[in-house]
Amino acid sequence: MQMLLSRQLAGAPEGDRSALARLVLGLLLLLLAAVAGLSIATGASDASALSVVESWFLETQETALSTRDRLIIYDIRLPRIVLGILVGASLAVSGALMQGLFRNPLADPGIIGVSAGAGLGAITVIVLGGTVLGPVVALLGIYTLPLAAFAGGLITTLLLYRVATRRGQTSVATMLLAGIALAALSGALSGILIYLADDRQLRDLTFWGLGSLGGATWTKIWAAGPIILAALVTTPFLARSLDALSLGEASARHLGIPVQRMKAAAILSVAAATGAAVAVSGGIGFVGIVVPHLLRLIIGPDHRYLLPGSALLGASLLLLADAVSRTIVAPAELPIGIVTAVFGAPFFLWVLLRRRDMLDL
Amino acid sequence: MIEAKNVSVSIGRKPILRGVNASTAPGEITAIVGPNGSGKSTLIKALSGDITYSGTISFNGRDLAEMRTGEAAALRAVLPQATTLSFPYTVHEVVRLGLLGGRSGAPHGLADLPERALARVDLAGFAGRLYQELSGGEQQRVQLARVLCQVWAPVLEGSPRYLLLDEPVSSLDIKHQLLVMRIAREFAQQGGGVVAVLHDLNLMAAFSDRAILMQHGQSVAAGSPQEVMQDELLSEVFECRLKVGTVPTGVTPFLLPQAASI
View 1 (cartoon, rainbow over the protein chains, first blue to last red):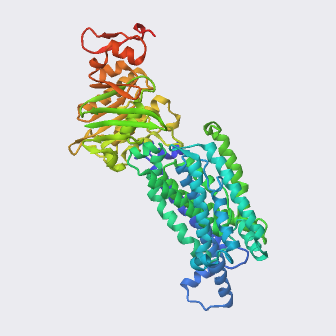
View 2: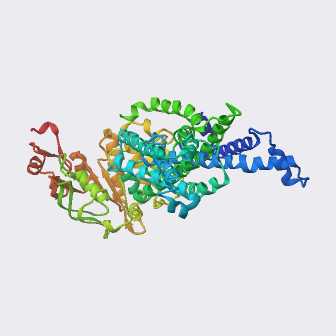
């Protein structure tokens, strides 16, 4: 199908998938708009998005009903959708960035322990925020949680990179094993903190840890949004460097890429995006591995298109997963982390199966 | 002009290069030859700026250690021994990476440069193929095409540019060995400089203007191929008895493995 499409986009040189990639980006934008529209129109209550939109244009008399609808749309559904878009985009882009950085299609913040490290940072704030870390919370306010998760993710990523990369080559086996060790360590430290937590904190932790967009509020969006947007805005500048890096560090440098600086920027972006996403939504897995992989099958690995494409597709898929999580056991709600894992884990196994010979484990 | 003065490299405590002096002029192909482990690849890695060295290396009088990566990329391109890719890029996408630095210096625009570079390495029509599905020799020529895109013009704004080739013909058949060496020669004839690590002494003799013979991390001889291709010198360095012959109609010396013995 890909070949067919490439042929149809005549005019471009053979092997140049840019035109196809731009077309796919356009379609993904439409997909996201459609999914977001669908999400805002459906929910547990019968609030009508249409009537709210109508009220923008028609100066109708405000009735009690439309005020209620307005509340549901603006303060419940809309924040959830915005958060879903932010989290989905940052998870998928983190995956794509990390895969480019490690030169490995299996690298993903969830799989190699970066999310666990970010989680440890978040749990630390939730449990110790009232006591030991009180002054920090007072200083940073609503940004404490995402910044702590960012710090946890950053430390994990740096450790992982240090252990798994030698002379510019990343060993897959070392990366995965080091990820298991770091995730276990983060898990153990988180366990100690949970052991220390009081009842109210335990409730917060459980709610947070299930992985859900359910608690979306505008406050959360204002806390995590700027960090996520800063990370996402950096990524286009890394695209060409990541393409060059796929030739190896030495060759990227020979092409004029300042490799060390670019790697530092990529690690910071991954940690910021993952940390902020984990802080507001808990552990939502597999988006970072599924989305870039699907896109590479269609538009190829060119990071100029892969990174924005991942943001768009990641946002759409997470909104869809959220829709499933809201409706499948309605009126109750399934944590979205379960939905992404049910679809993502078999997909990951399928990727492994296809690339077994290349993994060299 | 590339000049290496008293260049030493150690990995851990093991000295790999010991005070190497070497130079290569624009317009010339300089071959680095020597037995396995003599430091050929390390010398070209030092010239490429890949490893830390003591001593000085300069390109056109500019100290390599003080150049930014972008400046160095405008002066020289490096062909590694082999390159594996972790993602399914097409051949076109790989070759296009050579244009990243933006200093190709191609006179007729960049749009079709990848295709022209591919045609030059005898891979016309390969642009749409996936790199990972090519043979080792084809991959090596794709990388050469990428490297050519980076420094398409051998001379840019009056300063000569350089190709650093680490065993450029190691996985090629004889036709493509000759093709690659001719590309190097054309690059040199148009004013650029070429430094190539070569294993094949006959290719060195046939194509290079200067040869640097390495042994135990030192340059033991440097000069024209005729000066380096000496029975005693080669026998001593390669630790086997070698007899150099000469083509009746010319000055190009050659070696026959049949005439050698351990």
